[in-house]
Image (cartoon, rainbow, N blue to C red; front, side, top):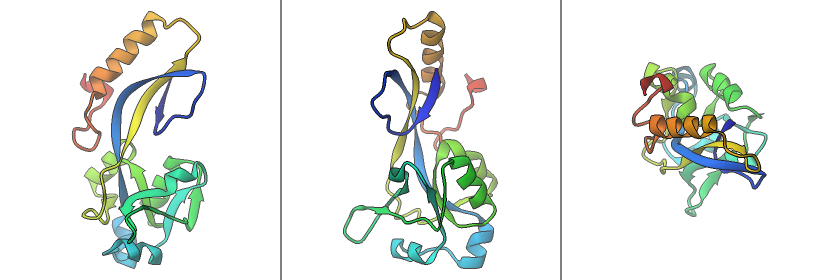
Length: 167
């Protein structure tokens, strides 16, 4: 079994929804001190934007362009890993869009701060437990999926942070 975040592609895997996690635009206080905080979505073009190499759909940020569509960015720095982008943002390399499950502790500590909070629309990524569809679901998998659903439930990581030890 694996935990997958975001939209799932068709596969031979069975998915069971566990919860959701919100996307936010973030930057380190050091970056914002050097470059200033963007005051409007259009001002993001003047900043170093950190984004994904694949899938490019992760470079669609939860803020609206002038025409009303979600902003599709062209990152100055690209990486294939959210953890790499998080590390770059923590080091002051630019503005990033990441999920709360990955950045909750950083935001609580003040290491990353949300930018364009008023302009950000609520976009949530799904959290799914995935496992092979063609195998009989063992009691262990079934029990663990039920445990995850109870631990995470409908709560978004941003509003009610939990750990598996909380349950």
